[in-house]
Length: 155
Image 1 (cartoon, rainbow, N blue to C red):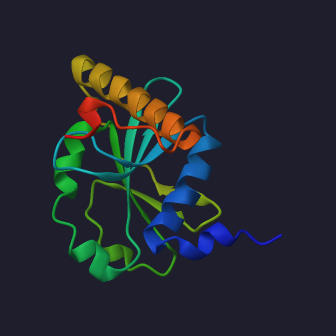
Image 2 (cartoon, rainbow, N blue to C red):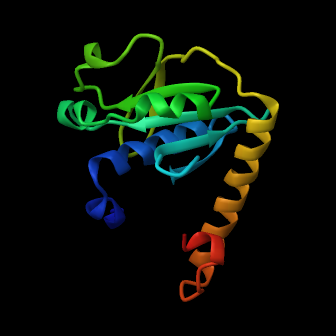
């Protein structure tokens, strides 16, 4: 049976799906379109079994990469930072000192491990709490779509 949900997904969303599937095989859970702080939205935030936090930005084309001006602002919100691209992407565009993941809609492979720059304990605690809260809200909204947003969600 064909997965028709893929038809309506954008190219970056398809990459994020494959990345999330792959990370799960390593014991990570993930949230797509995660907002670590006001004004920033990462494609995938992953939480590892030891509390590691990874940010993965999914780029589907040269133009998509070249219009991304916020990626360096994501570095202070994670322990490791990765780019996820398909195998046709011109990887020479990607900055040194970042991780690289090849992905498609079904799976992914970590090609280059990102260097580790550990978060401060207070920031880690804040991010893990936000991750858990966002995941719980999304699940609740999925189960009860007509639910009104909580006061802090509407701002």
